[in-house]
View 1 (cartoon, rainbow, N blue to C red):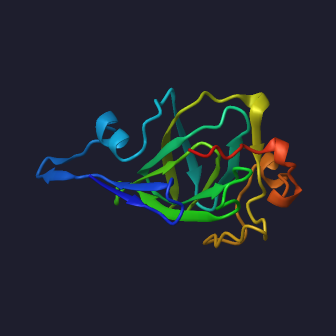
View 2 (cartoon, helix red, strand yellow):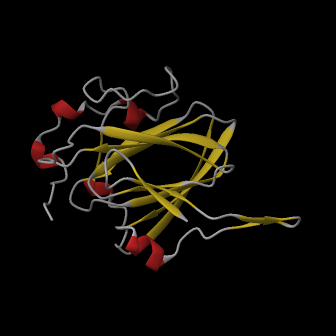
View 3 (cartoon, rainbow, N blue to C red):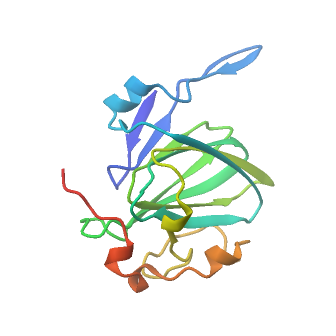
Length: 186
């Protein structure tokens, strides 16, 4: 298992060791000790799954006071997955990283608490699973519009399928600092 630290060092791409034979394959999707040794030590308390059609863009989502770390994996299809540092006071505030996650490459992306998350579907369909470090709190959710020019994400599509809620989100510069997660210096 390889842990690849991105330009935003807290966002980590995980490449599992895959064992294949004529029957198929096997790989670990989570191993608490290995992940903790790599810096992913918060317990996961909720698992989610979504299925979306080609061209769907979900995001950019976050929670304010109940910030969720997420461990994202694609079990069917291909997505372009994005993490944006929106922690007020962070030296990398407003910066983003991305990774292609697919059933074929079996990669995972760890997005720490305090980051916004979104993805778009590049295959006919995609099924995405993710583990969360805090429970979903509808009263605490927030979002940033997907094409915020101040962030400048290079999405591989220009006219995504969006939910009404995702389409109505504001840009990061229009969100008061009190409505964003805080950067906690360690």
